[in-house]
Amino acid sequence: MVSLSRIVNCTGMERAGVAHSPLLKQMQQQGLITRDLLGLGLSVDAGSRVLGGKGERGRPLCGRGL
Image 1: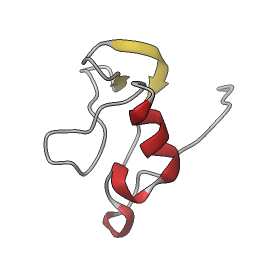
Image 2: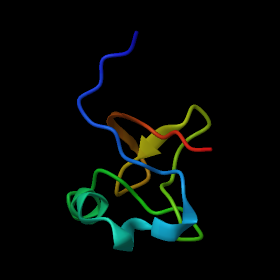
Image 3: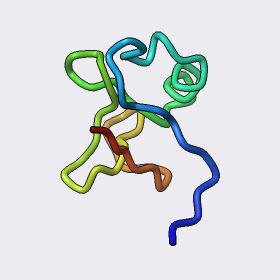
Image 4: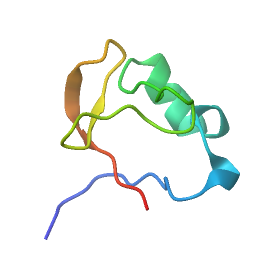
């Protein structure tokens, strides 16, 4: 069992990108996340940990998608 405080839907192109999500826009402004190179998702490391505004692993955020 995994204990989570929030879940972000990252499963479809119809809402792709940080620009379409108020939550993700706010997280980017706070430096918690970075867009991927295509602008369609989030930058993550090899372990699927979300990279912060300066490309570093910050808070324990993990990215999952289909």
